[in-house]
Length: 213
Ligand SMILES: [Zn+2]
Image (cartoon, rainbow, N blue to C red; front, side, top):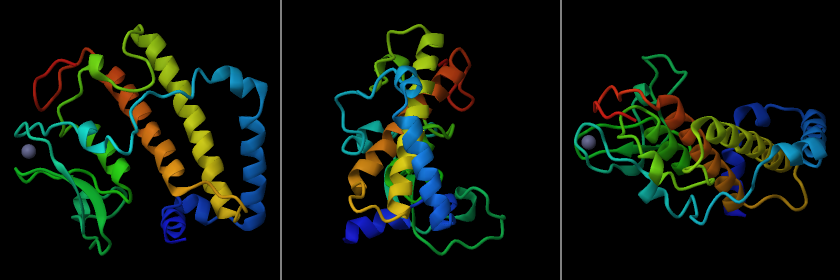
């Protein structure tokens, strides 16, 4: 029960704000798309890879650009500058997860550990992962435009599956998705976003390290 409560606390604000009838309507719309032939055909795979994206969070953290060390993920009260969408004079009062390096560099602060890991990797403060080492979704040996297409389609499917899971929690489904399942979908989504980010940066020189991606 405690765990289930934790996930409900982490529901996106846009889902929490929905009225119950609206949430039910959105849920049946999402389920209709998920079970459609079109969506099935547009989704290349749900086999994302052998690694568990939650158990491998520490390995997935990229080293800090400034000092080359791997930061740790900490749950502390962040600075306003680590939050998005808040004014500079905002005083954070809630603890958030963020990457914290021994050299003093800190990453974006978020409600969940795996989101803080993904945001750190894409922040420009981390050394980019070599494409050959990208561990998920079978994209390493694909041509960049094919890899991009595959990751985009996998991300679209994950967006929809996550939305369906959040909506089921919002409407009080009798058999709600478990916290770990929801967090795994979200963590895989972070990796799809990171892969797309690496493809976008491909051929460019990383502004902090001078490393060519
Ligand atoms: Zn550092």
